[in-house]
Every structure is written in structure tokens, then in C-alpha cells.
Amino acid sequence: MSDWPVGLPQVPLRAGYSRVERDTVIRSNMGYGPAKVRNRVITEMHDNVVRFQIDDAQKATLETFYSDNKALEWGWAYPGALVNYRFLSPPAYSEVQCDIWFVTMNVEQMP
Figure (cartoon, one colour):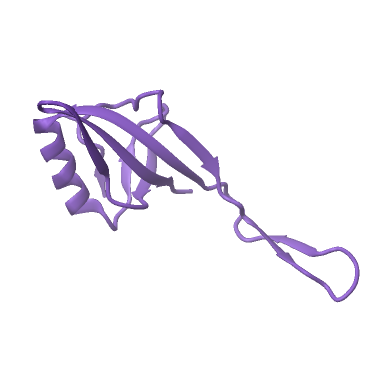
């Protein structure tokens, strides 16, 4: 398992950040009466959308990091303690100006 690269921003931009708790409950309809409810997992799981402003060198670093870790967990000390994450989809890049990019990533926080 690798860690989030030091050369990349360590804190995402506030604009565009979101964190959603996954639904971890299974509901089964009964023939009569209320639905049966049970937990799928005991731990909480969160999906996060994070955004960064990066330059061309950082974009190359992120592309390499994604290529090497797209199916693996990686550690990131955000929002404080070291937590493991995994990519949900490839990073999306949009150019702001020459050599400056906004990157949006969908990642899942592992239990």
C-alpha cells in the first residue's frame, strides 16, 4: 500500500468537496407488515468527491499515482489521521489556464 504523494496538495479545495455516507442497511419487504431491516456491514463507509488545483508537474505525478494504485488502497492523512482510500473512478481534469488544472476525484474511504 502506498501513501498519497507528498508533491500533491494534502488538503482538497473546499469548493466541490462532498462526503456522503453509504447506505449500509438492507431492507427486505415482508408479505405483510413492516420491512425487515439489517446491517450489511458494521463500520461506516463514505464516498468523497475531492477537488484540487494542480500544475502540470503535479498532474503527471497524479497520473502516475493513479496508474499504480487504481485498484489498490492508499493512505492519506486527510482529514487528520491516516485513513485508507480507494479510487471509485479515474480523476477528471479540466484546464483552468495554461499549465493549471482542476482535478476532481471520486474516492471511497475504507473502513
